[in-house]
Length: 453
Image (cartoon, rainbow, N blue to C red; front, top):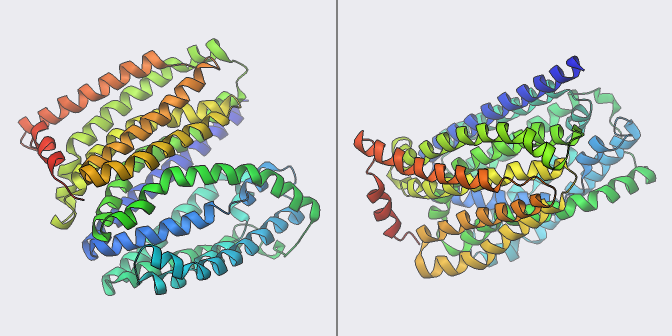
């Protein structure tokens, strides 16, 4: 038992450390690329990456998850069948991307997409032929090897894009960097396991098992993609590409805290609750003190980040990107509710109630789809950012309501921590003004009145 627990914490440590290193690398490369490239180029690539991610998520049939979940996942017949399905899916996505190039370019009134989308389309083939070894390592719980591989791939991809952007400061640096950053890890993935074990297979029983399991993954991926990316797809048509690139920078920074808690929730909270025999009130009492301590730390750190967010942007980016400062301050407020929701996600999964997670994402998507176009057209970009705060709060509210049904309500704790969080934001902002670092609350008010639409 002790060895098993130590193994779990070691695995969580490796994943956490490599995740943090990857996020730091991501943010640093984002800053460097912003210095080397124009905002419109980053906006164009943000749209392309969103469309690519959409294609992958909207056709996700759970190939990797099936390998991890199925008892036959280690069987070469099973994982080679899964790999074959993945290759077929990649080829189909490549063809569909070519067929949709003209409609997408016309829909966004962007002639550049007529040649950029076909240039990026081979990414689907590269990800399709990538070895299923990553999922096999995950099933075998060889977390250290997998985490280091992912970190190495991230380092290589970032270095490739930065080098290309330095010598070729055009959109092609980002396109070629994306392709090279996918091709090399795809080739290297075959050496994570015995490379000679790879074969094209089509076992009917394995196909049926993968597709049966995958239908639920498809539904979850569809809702998740729309909830997380509707703003990027809508903004690409509603605002300039330069402003989209600026917004993308703010989104990158604001998502980091939520991504970390999603990772920690899936690695620690979810399996801990799932393995516990306690439920309802007894489980709530065990979780309450640990959850309280975590939220106090988050409230302090996130409030400090909000207070200094605009000055951070002014420090590391040139004046072309300074609007991202206020964007980031507002989006980080939404991150507070996103973190509360992420913790609730893991709890609902742990007690075997994933439907609450789906419903919460539907609520978030509904708020964004309905409110974002109305607010943006009437009040401008700065006011539209508040929609994302409301959408995360709505997502959390649905989960809080669903948790009450399983005896895991933390409404009083969350209300107290949310009040503390906002008080700390005001306190830290005023303290930073007295220290001469920021302009205080009135600076936010003046920024909010400015329209960037």
